[in-house]
Amino acid sequence: MSYSKFFLFIGLIAFFVFGSNFLVPKLPWLSIKTKQEMASLRQENEALKAEVLEWKLSAPENQTEYKAKVYSVYPFNNQSELTITGGTLQGLKEGQPVTIGSSVLVGYIARTFESYSIVKTVFDDAWQVAVRIGESATDGLLVGGRTPELTLIGKHKTIQEGEIVYSASKSFPYGLTLGKVGAIKDSANTLFKEAALTPSYTLNDLSEVTVLLR
Image (tube, rainbow, N blue to C red; front, side):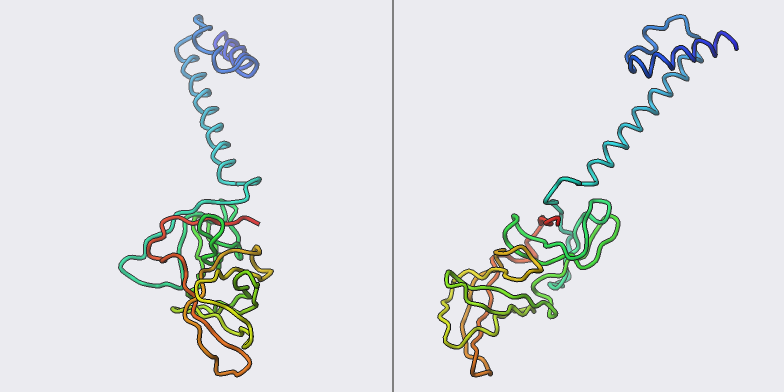
């Protein structure tokens, strides 16, 4: 074994035992080439540490929420879907609720990709979810669309405009706010009445949402 390789071997042992601070400054007898090789190893080690840290940050194992940015769709006006930052690499899954401030239900993740996800919103025609209305917890069915509606409300149930509408389906955490009761009207079915839903937000104004990880 040459002296150069011998001192390189000793230096590597010192690196792993005492850390990077032991390297070049404390081994003045090493050749320039050997010092360069050891400095290169130190840089590779730091790069690996950075990769491990990035992996930990992108896999929120103990987190219950994930803050995501909303991609702009301007000038288009597709209210039924949102595209958000974060996907499978961040632990997002299909079916997870998407909210504003962890309490106002906007929609749920319908499709995931590595770094982004598609969110189906309450303004989608296929959206239906069981809800309750006001302090009396009156049952109803929220039907999505450009103008979401509250349906299947018992004819003799007392509800008022402005009362809070919240989720009561096992598909979502109980009690997430969906909006308030709007104009109330009679249903074509004589056993029920209907009402408009007035959301507390406008999709075009959303720049950030919260995904509830569960």
